[in-house]
Length: 222
Image (tube, rainbow, N blue to C red; front, side, top):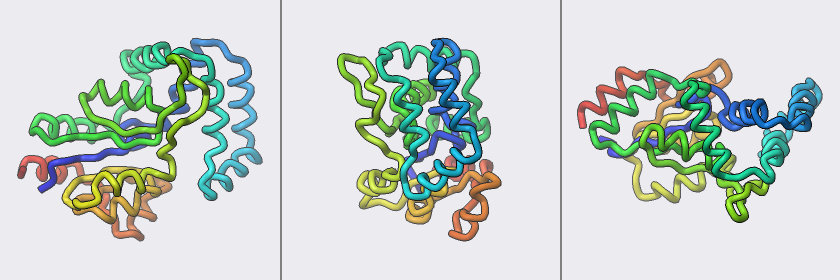
């Protein structure tokens, strides 16, 4: 049976896109009219259509632009705001999954978040749960964010993960992300977290839809 559980963050453990949940909250408390002007423009139908086409070509222009607004902010300030958001329940967890993962930890099963979200977000949330993590990494100079990524796991998670577990199939991987289909197919315990957008893709690829009672029973059988 598996000794390691890997879990996606956005729309899997936490509901929604954690990068934009953070940015919207952060710039609600640290006034930046340029950011909100960008958010208004990026919500236009034609702009969203362009972003979608670029995303299909593995370019997330929306995120690249949005991250630029973090240029010049202290890393400690960014982490502190994530902590404030956690204290105020602004990140909504998938309670059934969180409970199963906490139980796994209590049974000495390693739990690791694997996410393309920003490092300070993933690190702070992982610390809250006492989980390990892999994430994208922002570029910093003297602890000041430079507004761009030094390492981006988006579209690269599969490559990184197969290197991590190249000699092993006996692990559990849980994700809502259709980009993780190959990882889910490759392991002995791959579970898809269903949404209206991804369920058909999971079923077409013979990815098992997660059943939380079954997951807990598997953990108990360790």
